[in-house]
Length: 197
Image (cartoon, rainbow, N blue to C red; front, side, top):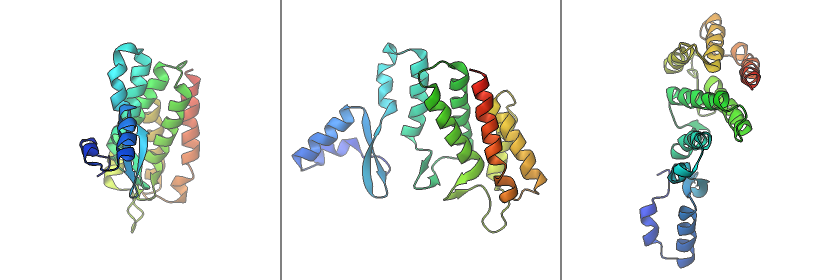
């Protein structure tokens, strides 16, 4: 199981450990299981209990961060969500960046946007965007790209549209011809978003 089950705190025999875990949870953290060990991460979902005291900008920021703390994007070098869900996270993050160009979390979310965009275009070690045997792009990935490109009203859709053209010109094969274009597309996306500032 991915997260420590908080109902099990009462079952912990070691008093010091029990107190520590209780403190972690009360401090709005949760414990995530990575490669057999638990690590504390901020529980952004739990922070929503402060929403009535926060600006819309901070509420929006917590919503974006909660997506990842509720269900990590990547764990153990594998994508934990679908490409469609990842596209949703990218668009949400872009919307924040465009809406709050002077926001106190602008730089952090611009970096997060870049990380998500690279995952989306490149895949990750244990979740490739292409079929291992044929090197042809997976259907679910291409179909997600097409849905994203069809949105047409944001930077992400324009960049992904250009990426589809590159992939189609390469007969749907994902190789160095395609991967070598990603940095330029990435820089184009980040540069265009920074122009909105």
